[in-house]
Image (cartoon, rainbow, N blue to C red; front, side, top):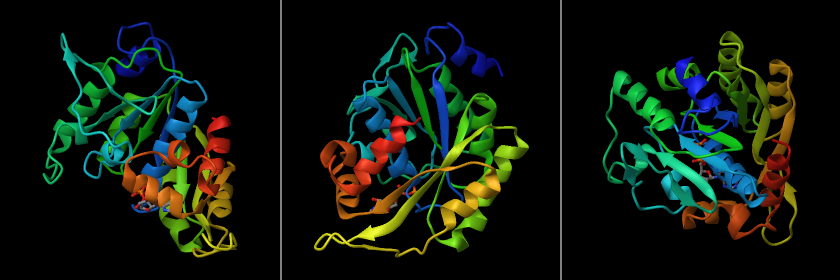
Length: 258
Ligand code: ADP
């Protein structure tokens, strides 16, 4: 827990104890990174000092979601996070060319994450969000060892079938005695761009079922909407680009409770 202590204590990289949320999902494609990026931008817009560590080392998407192409600057052995839309960012994606696969092995990944926590000059943070890789693999477990204070935010879709996969993440949190902050249901209903009506494309009940299993609550239900997907492709969080969009309003609301 030495690094956890460093994060917590008064050592230079992170000045004081931030609230730490590890955002996880059972599988890819449920919108975990999109939700994490937008919660970070929403919290920053509310005046909080926010760090976002993209720990999805193979499937990193933070550089794209924030439209960042530059690499972090290093000063005297410490790296400065990249600032975009008010959020301090760090991602393996900043260090590899876009079309280059990341083929690091376990020990190197652990080292990289350790450096992202200890050798990055995060400055004083109110909140640190960790975008975990999908599932319960090595990186996730390493990271939870490094940041023992993290609380789990589980992202799932309303589809009941997806819940079984997401439940593994909850079990992992239980096994490692990690607190569970809640469930975010994403892609909950599709809002029609023409008439504004909502259709339950992915069914419903998945978030509630997972929350019940985890002994926690559904913090919010983010609808499937066009502005969110467009914002992701444009490299600007939807809460910044289209704050009036249904997905953005819900993400603001969830962020305000974190
Ligand atoms: P994950 O991190 O779980 O793999 P992503 O955040 O990369 O998933 O999202 C997968 C895709 O779905 C992206 O193209 C993203 O823009 C899109 N997406 C995610 N959530 C929504 C939503 N609520 N409405 C519209 N598109 C979404």
